[in-house]
Length: 325
Image 1 (cartoon, helix red, strand yellow):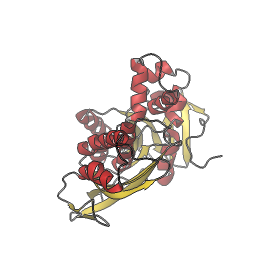
Image 2 (spheres, helix red, strand yellow):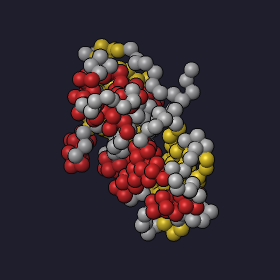
Image 3 (cartoon, one colour):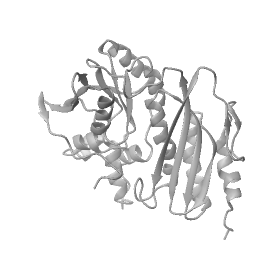
Image 4 (tube, one colour):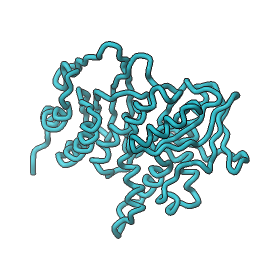
């Protein structure tokens, strides 16, 4: 039986290799703080998110997925700002330091970090109930960041990818291991929950096209409402236009719409753009190999309305709220 890993061994063996090679990292892991260089004409973009056992994932969740998701959920925030990801800080609290778990966790993180040129430049280690907090920094040309408050009446409302898959996948993961190999549909839905695809390149490409943007983490209905409220507009979502995948429709035929509206954890982009930009948005999505769907429009007034076959539809069940009763 191997001896327990020390904090220094964990850093050297597992975390320091995640520092990557970025010329703008002047001092990374190993000192009291990191030194980073921001290019002239760039603005710093910061975000942070946590994954807490029992809240965001179940005990026994795959370590590789947790490493991947810890970065992915933060990348999605930067995608919504049209930013280029750069540097990360990791606060990792673990009940024990298990080599296999650490190896898998870092492998999940590293694959996504390499894809988006993210360097881990510092953080904190501690013993306790499993909790993973990541702070991610990036940059965007001055004055070009996408925000929630830029939409105007007459803009059209879009969403990337498909909605509701992650919520269905989360429910399937909660059922535990299946006795038989999962079907292709089940595997797809679980994959969408455990390994979401942050739309980083799409977010950057929308700079100059979109007027406002938000990432869909708590559910389309509540997140679209946040964008609309920040922009001092009213909005309409046409439910027939919701992008729903074949596996979701087949697996959850009666709940697909509500999962798409309120399931959360999709990490897609919901954005507004002037109607005159429609052709450019279609062309951009096609160039990037992304799916983008027009789901509604903004108008003067306040509030978000759901419509089906031209008639108003009542709001769905409440989206996720950490402190809701």
